Image (cartoon, rainbow, N blue to C red):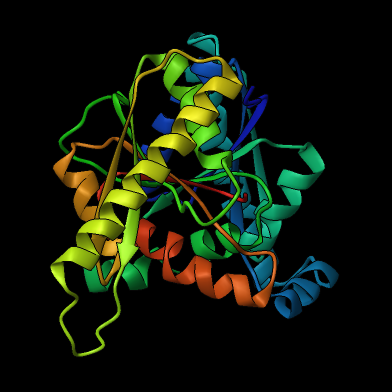
Length: 297
Protein backbone atom coordinates (compact mmCIF):
# COMPACT_ATOMS: atom_id res chain seq x y z
CA UNK A 1 0.00 0.00 0.00
CA UNK A 2 1.45 3.33 -1.08
CA UNK A 3 1.86 5.91 1.67
CA UNK A 4 1.88 9.62 0.98
CA UNK A 5 1.49 11.16 4.42
CA UNK A 6 3.64 14.14 3.50
CA UNK A 7 4.19 15.78 0.12
CA UNK A 8 6.74 18.45 -0.69
CA UNK A 9 5.69 20.98 -3.29
CA UNK A 10 8.76 22.92 -4.47
CA UNK A 11 8.05 26.28 -6.07
CA UNK A 12 10.16 28.81 -7.93
CA UNK A 13 7.21 31.02 -8.82
CA UNK A 14 6.87 29.71 -12.39
CA UNK A 15 3.69 28.59 -14.16
CA UNK A 16 5.03 25.04 -13.99
CA UNK A 17 5.23 25.39 -10.21
CA UNK A 18 1.60 26.51 -10.12
CA UNK A 19 0.61 23.43 -12.10
CA UNK A 20 2.72 21.29 -9.76
CA UNK A 21 0.69 22.64 -6.83
CA UNK A 22 -2.48 21.40 -8.53
CA UNK A 23 -0.96 17.92 -8.70
CA UNK A 24 0.24 18.11 -5.10
CA UNK A 25 -3.30 19.04 -4.06
CA UNK A 26 -4.72 16.20 -6.19
CA UNK A 27 -2.45 13.63 -4.53
CA UNK A 28 -3.05 15.12 -1.08
CA UNK A 29 -6.79 14.67 -1.49
CA UNK A 30 -6.35 11.07 -2.65
CA UNK A 31 -3.95 10.04 0.11
CA UNK A 32 -5.11 12.47 2.83
CA UNK A 33 -1.63 14.00 2.86
CA UNK A 34 -0.09 17.12 4.30
CA UNK A 35 1.60 19.44 1.80
CA UNK A 36 4.82 21.22 2.69
CA UNK A 37 5.33 24.11 0.29
CA UNK A 38 8.95 25.17 -0.03
CA UNK A 39 10.71 27.97 -1.86
CA UNK A 40 14.49 28.04 -1.77
CA UNK A 41 16.21 31.39 -2.23
CA UNK A 42 19.10 30.26 -4.37
CA UNK A 43 22.49 31.07 -2.91
CA UNK A 44 25.85 29.36 -3.35
CA UNK A 45 27.46 28.01 -0.18
CA UNK A 46 30.23 30.61 -0.18
CA UNK A 47 27.79 33.49 -0.63
CA UNK A 48 25.63 31.98 2.08
CA UNK A 49 28.56 32.13 4.48
CA UNK A 50 29.18 35.80 3.63
CA UNK A 51 25.47 36.54 3.99
CA UNK A 52 25.15 34.90 7.40
CA UNK A 53 28.10 36.73 8.95
CA UNK A 54 27.13 40.25 7.84
CA UNK A 55 23.52 41.16 8.76
CA UNK A 56 24.16 44.78 7.73
CA UNK A 57 25.02 43.97 4.12
CA UNK A 58 22.87 44.82 1.11
CA UNK A 59 22.67 41.12 0.26
CA UNK A 60 21.24 40.38 3.72
CA UNK A 61 18.54 43.01 3.29
CA UNK A 62 17.58 41.68 -0.15
CA UNK A 63 17.34 38.08 1.06
CA UNK A 64 15.30 39.11 4.07
CA UNK A 65 12.83 40.96 1.87
CA UNK A 66 12.57 38.03 -0.56
CA UNK A 67 11.99 35.69 2.37
CA UNK A 68 9.20 37.89 3.70
CA UNK A 69 7.53 38.14 0.28
CA UNK A 70 7.52 34.37 -0.25
CA UNK A 71 6.33 33.74 3.29
CA UNK A 72 3.31 35.92 2.53
CA UNK A 73 2.64 34.02 -0.73
CA UNK A 74 2.88 30.64 0.99
CA UNK A 75 0.65 31.91 3.78
CA UNK A 76 -2.00 32.89 1.23
CA UNK A 77 -1.82 29.41 -0.32
CA UNK A 78 -2.16 27.87 3.14
CA UNK A 79 -5.39 29.82 3.71
CA UNK A 80 -6.87 28.63 0.40
CA UNK A 81 -5.95 24.98 0.94
CA UNK A 82 -7.11 25.01 4.55
CA UNK A 83 -10.51 26.07 3.25
CA UNK A 84 -10.38 22.93 1.09
CA UNK A 85 -9.52 20.85 4.18
CA UNK A 86 -5.92 20.24 3.07
CA UNK A 87 -3.13 20.68 5.60
CA UNK A 88 -0.42 22.99 4.25
CA UNK A 89 2.79 24.38 5.73
CA UNK A 90 5.09 26.85 4.01
CA UNK A 91 8.86 26.98 4.33
CA UNK A 92 11.32 29.49 2.88
CA UNK A 93 14.90 28.24 2.85
CA UNK A 94 18.21 29.70 1.71
CA UNK A 95 20.94 27.81 -0.14
CA UNK A 96 21.30 25.51 -3.13
CA UNK A 97 17.71 24.54 -4.08
CA UNK A 98 18.19 20.84 -4.87
CA UNK A 99 20.19 20.20 -1.70
CA UNK A 100 17.72 22.06 0.50
CA UNK A 101 14.76 20.21 -0.99
CA UNK A 102 16.43 16.84 -0.42
CA UNK A 103 17.41 17.79 3.12
CA UNK A 104 13.87 18.90 3.91
CA UNK A 105 12.43 15.69 2.46
CA UNK A 106 14.69 13.62 4.69
CA UNK A 107 14.11 15.60 7.87
CA UNK A 108 10.33 15.65 7.39
CA UNK A 109 10.20 12.00 6.23
CA UNK A 110 8.34 13.03 3.10
CA UNK A 111 6.83 10.42 0.75
CA UNK A 112 6.60 12.43 -2.48
CA UNK A 113 8.23 15.49 -4.04
CA UNK A 114 6.23 17.45 -6.63
CA UNK A 115 8.04 19.92 -8.89
CA UNK A 116 7.53 21.76 -12.15
CA UNK A 117 9.34 20.97 -15.37
CA UNK A 118 9.66 23.42 -18.21
CA UNK A 119 9.12 23.22 -21.92
CA UNK A 120 9.53 20.54 -24.54
CA UNK A 121 12.22 19.83 -27.07
CA UNK A 122 15.68 21.42 -27.20
CA UNK A 123 14.85 24.60 -25.28
CA UNK A 124 12.83 22.64 -22.76
CA UNK A 125 15.78 20.35 -22.11
CA UNK A 126 17.84 23.34 -21.10
CA UNK A 127 15.11 24.93 -19.00
CA UNK A 128 14.02 21.74 -17.24
CA UNK A 129 17.50 22.04 -15.96
CA UNK A 130 19.31 21.82 -12.83
CA UNK A 131 16.97 21.74 -9.85
CA UNK A 132 14.37 19.18 -10.95
CA UNK A 133 16.91 16.79 -12.43
CA UNK A 134 19.29 17.11 -9.49
CA UNK A 135 16.48 16.34 -7.08
CA UNK A 136 15.45 13.40 -9.27
CA UNK A 137 18.97 11.98 -9.24
CA UNK A 138 19.51 12.34 -5.51
CA UNK A 139 16.07 11.64 -4.10
CA UNK A 140 15.32 8.26 -2.60
CA UNK A 141 11.57 8.95 -2.69
CA UNK A 142 9.29 9.39 -5.73
CA UNK A 143 9.54 12.66 -7.66
CA UNK A 144 6.63 13.94 -9.73
CA UNK A 145 7.71 16.29 -12.54
CA UNK A 146 4.90 18.42 -13.94
CA UNK A 147 4.65 20.53 -17.06
CA UNK A 148 2.19 23.40 -17.44
CA UNK A 149 -0.74 22.22 -19.55
CA UNK A 150 -2.80 25.18 -20.73
CA UNK A 151 -5.57 23.02 -22.15
CA UNK A 152 -6.48 21.60 -18.73
CA UNK A 153 -8.28 23.51 -16.02
CA UNK A 154 -8.16 20.71 -13.44
CA UNK A 155 -6.22 17.54 -12.75
CA UNK A 156 -7.93 14.35 -13.90
CA UNK A 157 -5.74 11.26 -14.17
CA UNK A 158 -7.64 8.72 -16.23
CA UNK A 159 -4.84 6.96 -18.13
CA UNK A 160 -1.55 5.83 -16.56
CA UNK A 161 1.37 4.49 -18.60
CA UNK A 162 4.02 2.29 -16.96
CA UNK A 163 7.19 1.48 -18.94
CA UNK A 164 8.44 -1.84 -17.55
CA UNK A 165 11.74 -3.56 -18.30
CA UNK A 166 11.04 -7.31 -18.19
CA UNK A 167 14.76 -7.99 -17.73
CA UNK A 168 14.67 -6.31 -14.30
CA UNK A 169 13.08 -7.66 -11.14
CA UNK A 170 11.72 -4.42 -9.70
CA UNK A 171 7.97 -3.90 -9.83
CA UNK A 172 7.83 -0.71 -7.76
CA UNK A 173 6.58 1.52 -10.58
CA UNK A 174 3.76 -0.84 -11.52
CA UNK A 175 2.76 -1.40 -7.91
CA UNK A 176 2.61 2.37 -7.37
CA UNK A 177 0.54 2.81 -10.52
CA UNK A 178 -1.87 0.03 -9.53
CA UNK A 179 -2.39 1.48 -6.07
CA UNK A 180 -3.07 4.93 -7.54
CA UNK A 181 -5.34 3.56 -10.28
CA UNK A 182 -7.43 1.63 -7.76
CA UNK A 183 -7.98 4.79 -5.73
CA UNK A 184 -9.03 6.98 -8.66
CA UNK A 185 -10.46 4.37 -11.04
CA UNK A 186 -7.85 4.99 -13.75
CA UNK A 187 -6.73 2.81 -16.66
CA UNK A 188 -3.23 1.30 -16.67
CA UNK A 189 -1.18 0.40 -19.73
CA UNK A 190 2.14 -1.39 -19.21
CA UNK A 191 4.65 -1.24 -22.04
CA UNK A 192 7.95 -2.91 -22.76
CA UNK A 193 10.22 -1.28 -25.31
CA UNK A 194 12.44 -3.48 -27.47
CA UNK A 195 15.42 -1.34 -28.40
CA UNK A 196 17.40 -1.97 -31.56
CA UNK A 197 20.76 -0.39 -32.23
CA UNK A 198 21.67 0.77 -35.78
CA UNK A 199 24.08 -1.96 -36.85
CA UNK A 200 23.61 -1.14 -40.52
CA UNK A 201 21.79 -4.40 -41.29
CA UNK A 202 18.07 -5.05 -41.43
CA UNK A 203 16.75 -7.46 -38.82
CA UNK A 204 14.95 -10.43 -40.45
CA UNK A 205 11.18 -10.24 -39.99
CA UNK A 206 10.93 -13.72 -38.47
CA UNK A 207 13.44 -12.79 -35.74
CA UNK A 208 11.62 -9.56 -34.99
CA UNK A 209 8.25 -11.34 -34.93
CA UNK A 210 9.53 -14.02 -32.52
CA UNK A 211 11.11 -11.42 -30.26
CA UNK A 212 7.92 -9.37 -30.06
CA UNK A 213 5.79 -12.47 -29.43
CA UNK A 214 8.07 -13.80 -26.69
CA UNK A 215 8.37 -10.38 -25.06
CA UNK A 216 4.59 -9.90 -25.18
CA UNK A 217 4.04 -13.26 -23.49
CA UNK A 218 6.65 -12.52 -20.82
CA UNK A 219 5.22 -9.04 -20.16
CA UNK A 220 1.69 -10.45 -19.82
CA UNK A 221 2.92 -13.15 -17.39
CA UNK A 222 4.81 -10.55 -15.35
CA UNK A 223 1.78 -8.29 -15.04
CA UNK A 224 -0.54 -11.19 -14.21
CA UNK A 225 1.84 -12.37 -11.49
CA UNK A 226 1.89 -8.88 -9.92
CA UNK A 227 -1.91 -8.72 -10.05
CA UNK A 228 -2.22 -12.08 -8.32
CA UNK A 229 0.27 -11.08 -5.60
CA UNK A 230 -1.70 -7.91 -4.94
CA UNK A 231 -5.09 -9.55 -5.25
CA UNK A 232 -6.28 -6.79 -7.55
CA UNK A 233 -9.05 -7.13 -10.12
CA UNK A 234 -7.88 -4.02 -11.97
CA UNK A 235 -7.77 -4.54 -15.73
CA UNK A 236 -4.25 -3.83 -16.96
CA UNK A 237 -3.39 -3.75 -20.65
CA UNK A 238 0.06 -4.57 -22.01
CA UNK A 239 1.85 -3.55 -25.19
CA UNK A 240 5.30 -4.31 -26.61
CA UNK A 241 6.77 -1.69 -28.91
CA UNK A 242 10.10 -1.36 -30.67
CA UNK A 243 12.33 1.48 -31.80
CA UNK A 244 15.91 2.69 -31.39
CA UNK A 245 15.10 5.62 -29.08
CA UNK A 246 13.30 4.31 -25.99
CA UNK A 247 12.45 7.62 -24.34
CA UNK A 248 11.03 9.22 -27.49
CA UNK A 249 8.92 6.14 -28.16
CA UNK A 250 7.52 6.19 -24.62
CA UNK A 251 6.67 9.89 -24.98
CA UNK A 252 5.04 9.27 -28.36
CA UNK A 253 3.03 6.35 -26.99
CA UNK A 254 1.91 8.49 -24.06
CA UNK A 255 0.57 11.11 -26.48
CA UNK A 256 -1.07 8.48 -28.67
CA UNK A 257 -2.85 6.90 -25.69
CA UNK A 258 -3.90 10.25 -24.20
CA UNK A 259 -1.83 9.49 -21.11
CA UNK A 260 -2.22 11.71 -18.06
CA UNK A 261 0.64 10.26 -16.01
CA UNK A 262 3.73 8.16 -16.69
CA UNK A 263 5.05 6.13 -13.75
CA UNK A 264 8.59 4.93 -14.34
CA UNK A 265 11.42 3.38 -12.36
CA UNK A 266 14.63 5.37 -12.21
CA UNK A 267 18.14 4.40 -11.27
CA UNK A 268 20.45 6.85 -9.53
CA UNK A 269 22.24 5.28 -6.61
CA UNK A 270 25.56 4.79 -8.38
CA UNK A 271 27.42 6.53 -11.16
CA UNK A 272 26.82 3.77 -13.68
CA UNK A 273 23.11 3.75 -12.91
CA UNK A 274 22.96 7.53 -13.25
CA UNK A 275 23.77 7.01 -16.91
CA UNK A 276 20.76 4.70 -17.19
CA UNK A 277 18.61 7.29 -15.45
CA UNK A 278 19.87 9.98 -17.78
CA UNK A 279 19.22 7.91 -20.88
CA UNK A 280 15.67 6.83 -20.02
CA UNK A 281 13.79 8.37 -17.08
CA UNK A 282 15.32 11.84 -17.45
CA UNK A 283 14.68 11.87 -21.16
CA UNK A 284 11.12 10.65 -20.69
CA UNK A 285 10.56 13.62 -18.38
CA UNK A 286 12.12 15.94 -20.94
CA UNK A 287 10.27 14.53 -23.95
CA UNK A 288 6.79 13.87 -22.57
CA UNK A 289 3.90 16.32 -22.52
CA UNK A 290 2.27 14.77 -19.48
CA UNK A 291 3.37 14.53 -15.84
CA UNK A 292 5.99 11.90 -15.00
CA UNK A 293 6.42 10.20 -11.64
CA UNK A 294 9.87 8.66 -11.24
CA UNK A 295 10.77 6.41 -8.34
CA UNK A 296 13.69 4.25 -7.29
CA UNK A 297 13.26 0.49 -7.74
